Amino acid sequence: MTKVLVFDSGPLINLSMNGLLYLLEKLKKASNTKFIITLDVKHETIDCPLEIQRFELEALQLKQLMDSKIIELPDSLGISQGELAEKTSSLKNIANNLLYQGNSPIEIVSQSEMSCLALSEILTEKGIENIIAIDERTTRMITENPKNLENIISNKIHQQVKLSNKNITEFKQFKFIRSSELVFVAYKKGLSDIKDKKVLEAMIYATKFKGAAISWDEINVLKKL
Image (cartoon, rainbow, N blue to C red; front, side, top):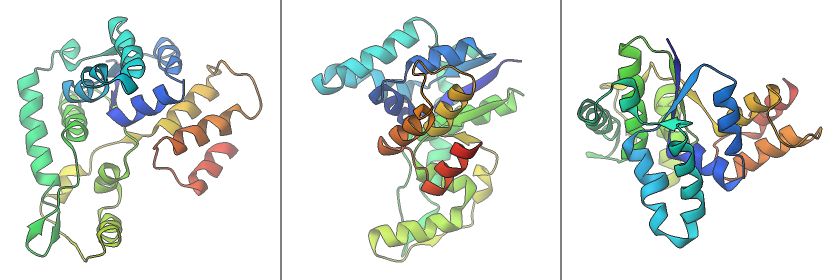
């Protein structure tokens, strides 16, 4: 069965802003992997930006990847929008009721992020191996370290928030990759158009400065691999 890489909006925008979208076409050709985005991600990265002069070029570049089927929609795997929308709504409701300030839940995730997790869950149920490309820290931490997320949000809003343990196991099964790690994989496969000994660190730095939540310690580990 073909593997699937599910893209959130962040990595697509990140790669586009850094002039690195060409790596997706090369990665697609070098692997037996389908690159999938949800309609919510398409809305954020293509449909809306096409109407905004500042972002029109990036949107056209992504649209071209869709037109050439480098990036596809879930229906290419037989997954209906109705099924996906229902699961997205469920996961979003659970995630946005995990952290509380007093008796009030705090909204911490977006529709597009949860649509990616919903798609991943459906794929897993179908026995299709998948991973989610996402740069945003909050969604990853719900899976990887929810207790630490409680501390981060508390510090961010300067008020104590509490993590509800109810339904936290809903997010244990997801696997993530950031744009920084995507460019690392592309570099290791020799897919970069720039042939220079500093290109790896340059690409990783570029993704960090355009929004990938990766620490300097993690960057140093990648550089040594």
